[in-house]
Length: 82
Image (cartoon, one colour):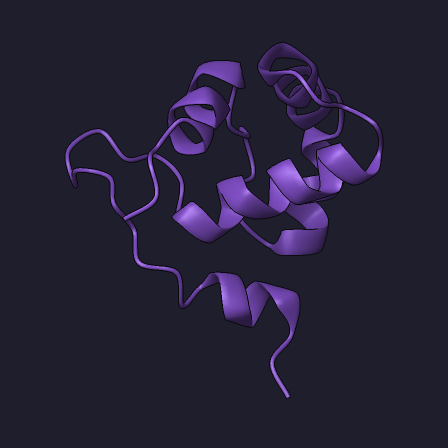
């Protein structure tokens, strides 16, 4: 059985390779977790990401010094479905 993260890792990344700082699954899991906590705007999701940076990085075992900001979250969320 797939875990949520394993399933998110199978989502095809639509972004260009240049300038990518985070894997798509990482941005998507932050959007999901933030939304579950009641953060619905890009800025609120960005604040959730920044305010929970230490615990997110520790639990998800990625990027020890940063998490996506609201502009990264906005770009991912605004991508039209294929």
